[in-house]
Image 1 (cartoon, rainbow, N blue to C red):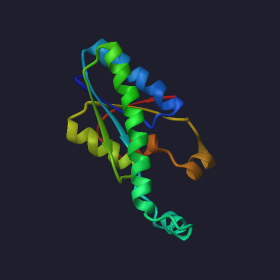
Image 2: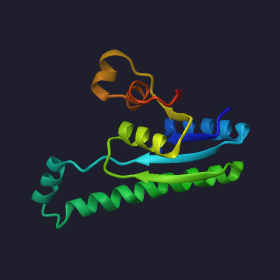
Image 3: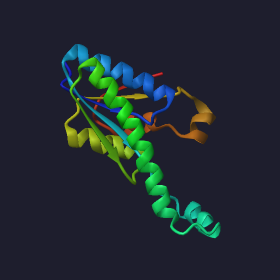
Length: 148
């Protein structure tokens, strides 16, 4: 049924559950997987605060931190996909809001299913904290499997 799954992860415990679920589904379907992690753009206000702390290049510091975190997240996903015998590609999308990066990658890769985690927050807490899975569900034409 599925030929190409996009699995979105931020390395959190919940995202790891979604990764496991997506990899198991891909294995059972014989599908390929793209594992994506998205790092948001740096915040000018945050960078200005760091500059006031006399950090010589806060943007480069942020980018190095983001790249290191993405590498760690994707390395763990690659190891798990290899263990399960799933064909995969890992991708770090930089400087985008997570939902936008996930949607764009799913379309670019021709994914027929997006797999991602969600805390399942409702009401005011969802409004305050936002929900990347909700944004993906409402903005993307690709079907999504949300793992709680």
